[in-house]
Image (cartoon, rainbow, N blue to C red; front, top):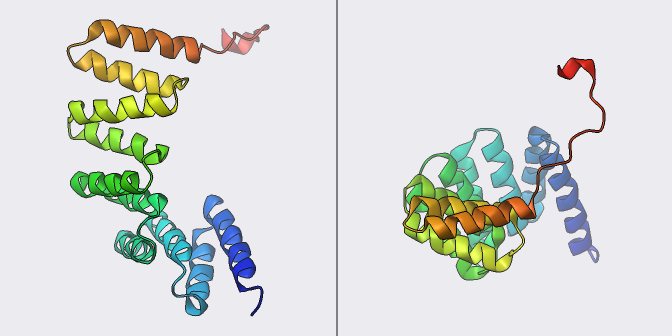
Length: 188
């Protein structure tokens, strides 16, 4: 078929929309059908892994994410997705390894940076989380979320002055939303 890649991309986009809309059973069915004709489609395996995980099929999710990685080992998103599954089932060492693989493929993969920070904090590895927080700030210097995370980390360590500096900057970057100009009686 001459238009095979375009057809495949359209199918994957449609299936991604199904996954995003939580139409997971239909997404799984379509992905299984698609993989009959395109068994080497890493994107399809990755999407199927996500759909399986969201339906509670953890072993199938891991297997499909691993297949996607085997077919395209340099895709940071695939490693990140497998890491998210491991993190959700509290296999933090494996999750951290996946995030590190993702960052080896793409040192600026923000989702992996944010996820590894969360996982490292769950394991109380403040020092390594601190390193990734600094990377996050380097990539997004105006991110209130990054500054808040880093400030909180510093507050747990021996740098309360530096923590305060980042926490203040976080509030400046993301000020509280303005108060409504009118109130209804229901609020009182």
